[in-house]
Image 1 (tube, rainbow, N blue to C red):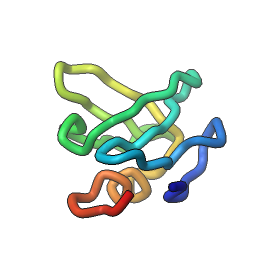
Image 2: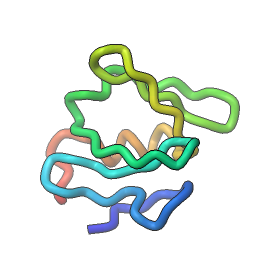
Image 3: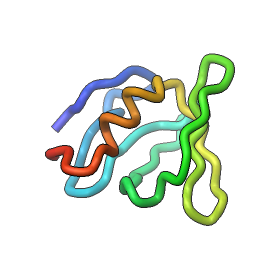
Image 4: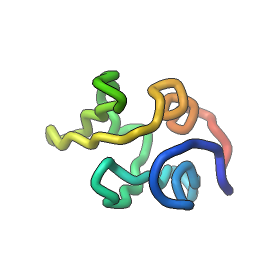
Length: 76
């Protein structure tokens, strides 16, 4: 189910079970669960997601869009 969004690729904002699929700024596709996102940081025309293990994902989505996707209780 598409749950909104902007950025590269037609599959951004697709929720599959507990995962949200999105693309980073380089076009790499990520399937993230809400529990892996430790922090969101708004940067120059991008949002940085700090994931468990220290991995950093840069995406063109707005922070409020990402928060809506990973919100506890959000329905697939």
